[in-house]
Image (cartoon, rainbow, N blue to C red):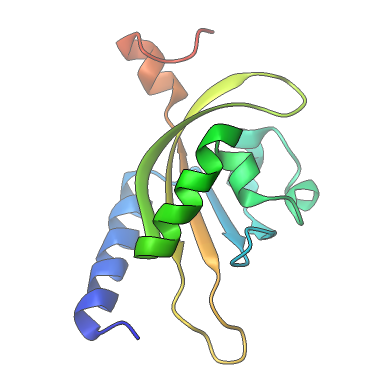
Length: 135
């Protein structure tokens, strides 16, 4: 069980990420099955929120070659922070660059734990710097 210092750290981390940039907030079970997808995520992923439900969080956020590494990092530390991910959007093929933070939530009574993904679309920022996907 996490101590007060750990909980404070995660609260501070969450606040910092939300303040900095959270274009999409996605909740999933521990297997990565999406249970909640906010409306802002629709703009990032070009998908209706209802269509995202039941999809695999990891497949949506990361290239196939990165999924096992991300899952292992989550298993080891209960979070993945500010991981860059270059993906092609399903349907359009448009390439986007994301900054992703995933946290395991605290254990809720009768609900267990879940995953919360905070996703920032940094494509435009990277284009301005000359390092992002081409327009």
